[in-house]
Image (cartoon, rainbow, N blue to C red; front, side, top):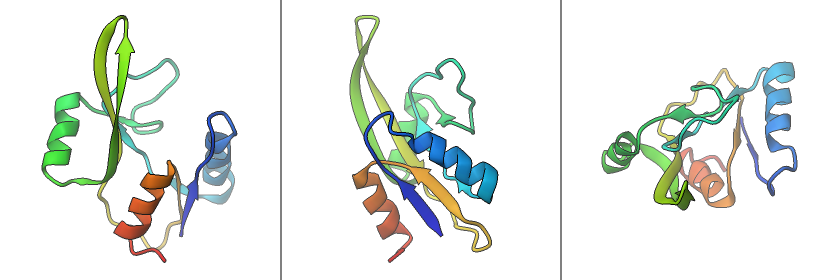
Length: 115
């Protein structure tokens, strides 16, 4: 089973995800990002942090289930940050949880032929 959590910013998606992981044994589907790690984040827990080139290589190699890019300005410098989920096999013995937007959810549902 995959539980998909969607919602506006700061409504508690990550809190619900952590409860599902801690209390119910769900496995988090960890997204990849090319943005820098923020204070308190851990690689492999919050995101898989990769370089922009590594992310672009994953896109070029058709390794992604879904991805999106965001234009940003950091310290007066324009940049593009990528976020997405890399292809993987589901383990039928596990339940999964993912925090994602609507388009990402549709791509996951289509990729795993979930419904």
